[in-house]
Length: 280
Image (cartoon, rainbow, N blue to C red; front, side, top):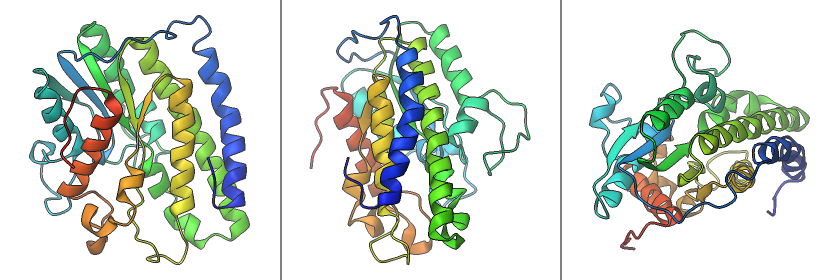
């Protein structure tokens, strides 16, 4: 992957060193070498953050049941046209990569405040309780890792930014490897789809161009996905140049609009391999 910033190019090298060993170790016995063509199960399992929940800032106090325009729900509707399928959405607002694994952490993604089962543990349990009945699985996670470090990034010097991003991406790669490796081990034949992250900021909106950061995010996630036999849905690319329409950034909120969630659902459908007709 081409990188627009030499610091970020270095980060890719460091982070991938963390990626390859655990990913390869998880496949030492070749249990996932041959993955069947995608077939639909009775359940669609979704993991993720507020994007999986379908959060909308115009109804911030609503319950998740109200946010049915999210990409997860739109993707389920697309799947249902192929074959009846139920949704098990484990998404949690504010979730980070490490909280998805450990559960019960606060918004800083560092301090444990509640002893609750993690999304990953719930997902593994659901797969165990419904053997052969779950397909597909989607995962969007990592955006809050960036958000929780945004303030520090903007006030840091370039040298400090380099250290911050190296540590941040290294941790995310390790967590992604654990998440996808665990799901793959729990369901060797499941059609697992990772969703990358769009950049909500239009070109020129910020003094510091964050596009290289989001491209690095996408590149690293793609590497981990490939190593763990997971498909990648690219939502980053279609959002470029359409940030005002596809997100709520005009009112200072980074979440997707209904239109943005539709674009995300279409990207997931395209990556999934299912026979879904998408009207452009």
